[in-house]
Amino acid sequence: MTNPIRPTDDEARQLARTLLAGARFAALGVVDQDACPLVTRVAFGLCPDGQPISLISSLSAHTQALQENPACSLLVGEPGDRGDPLTHPRISLQGRAHFISNSDKEHRRLADHYLRVQPKAKLYVGFADFCFVCFAVKAGYLNGGFGKAFHLSPEDLFAPG
Image 1 (cartoon, rainbow, N blue to C red):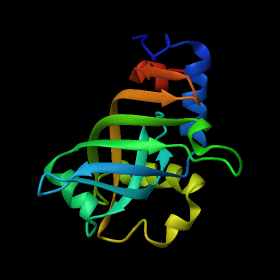
Image 2 (cartoon, rainbow, N blue to C red):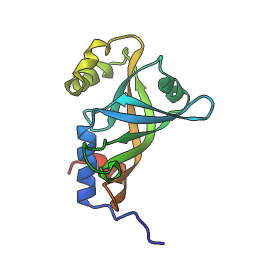
Image 3 (cartoon, helix red, strand yellow):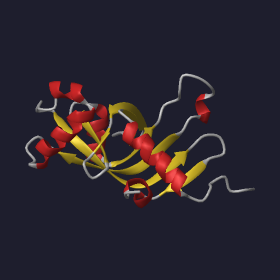
Image 4 (cartoon, one colour):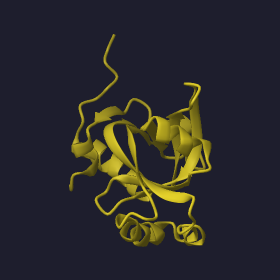
């Protein structure tokens, strides 16, 4: 059987970075308290250093799951208006969640940056139950469309290029 994964090249890296930079939401996969998978939609952005970030409520099931088990996955990329949805590019990221509470001195800097791409979050960014979650990505899996699959490292995804 032929390996369907292509060697990672600059075109794949650029497509992955473009998908991440343009995303405003993502599907977040976690493992809940009963060891069952749970997938939900979250707002999405990038930290000033380029890593994925979201603003989430401690009242949500996915936040509670991440607090118990920070291992998670994000799916970024949506089908276009036309054509087969499976031919549109998307990227899955695997990593671990790290929380930054309202009381953390880093929160204000992240809030200022995050609100540039998620301005409606201004309504709740300061609520006591909301905090930022940063995702330390360990691997990326890019599907650039039919027959265009790539494995990407954090360096492929977040290094300048």
